[in-house]
Length: 141
Image (cartoon, rainbow, N blue to C red; front, top):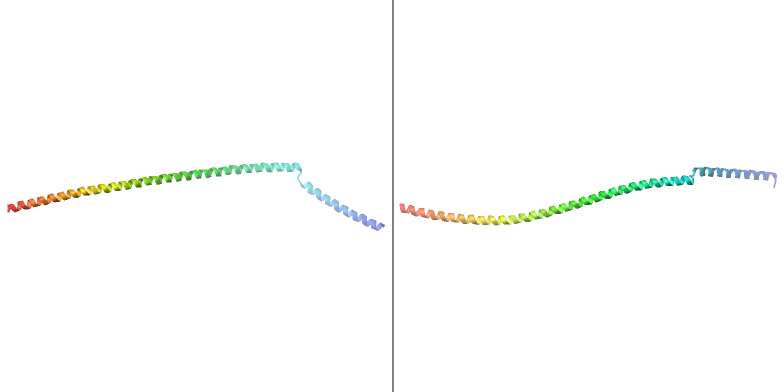
C-alpha cells in the first residue's frame, strides 16, 4: 500500500469513527432522556394510584345510579299499586251505583204504582161524590 492510499484509508477510517462517535452520542442523549427502572416503577405506582382513585369514583357513581334506578323502580311499583287500588275502588263504586240505580228504579216504580193507585181511588171517590152530588141536586129540583 502506498503512502497516499494509506492516508486515504486513515482519513476514511477517521470519518467512520467520527460518524460512529456521533451515533453513540445521539444514543447517549436518547438513553439519558429515557426513564430509569426506578423512575418507571414510580410512574407505574403513580398511574396505579390514579387508576384506583378513578375506579373507586366510578364504583361510587355506579352505586348512585343503581340506587337511583331502584328508587325509580320502587316509585313505579308504588304508582302501579296505587293505580290498581284506584281502579278497584272505582269498580266497587260503579257496582254500588248500578245496584243503587236498580233499587232506586224499583222504589220509583213502587211509589208510582202506589201514587197511581191512590189517584185512581181519589178519582173513583170523586166520581162517586160527583154522582151523589148530581143525585142530590136532581132531587132538590
